[in-house]
Image 1 (tube, helix red, strand yellow):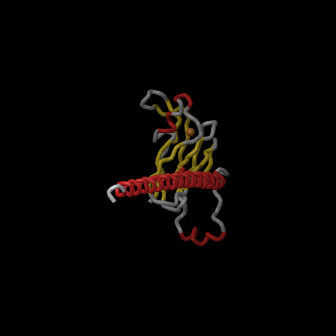
Image 2 (tube, rainbow, N blue to C red):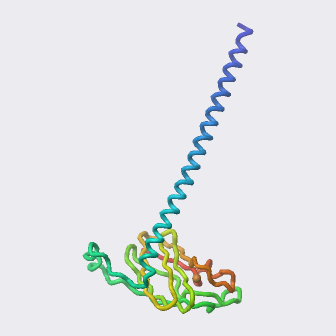
Image 3 (spheres, rainbow, N blue to C red):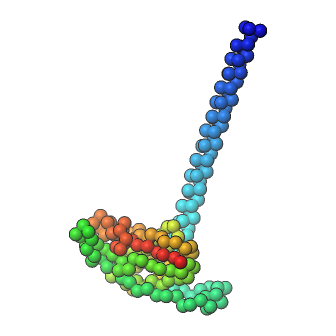
Length: 190
Ligand SMILES: [Cu+2]
């Protein structure tokens, strides 16, 4: 009895250790799977984002605002006509805190009603494209040189930052692209 007791304890201890390691490796596998799930979810959201920006690019890059589709004409008729905001894109024009002149959108704060289009009549006086891009809300308006009208629609309430994704402000290493009031700003949807 006295001899066997410690043996059983050892066995029990070994069994505990075994259970522990199984549990640990189980967790490890589960952790790995969760990691893979996160990666898959990320990939899917990137794909979704790409698809949504492609969709909005198709709608807005024509520069022509098309009337709503037949199915939605009843609702469109009952809402107020879309507001138009006029602004310009001017290269190397606004003095920054660094003493350099930067590329700008002359208005960078856009107030919209959720789901209602705001028309942006933009005179891009620069000879290259710029953009109003807010991945969070699927907005990607490519602003071509010249005067064109684009449609900004945001489907959820909030304050969202946007920025120009087309490399610009090259005299200042793209500084304007990350600074609100230059090639970046905010969309406020209420
Ligand atoms: Cu730009």
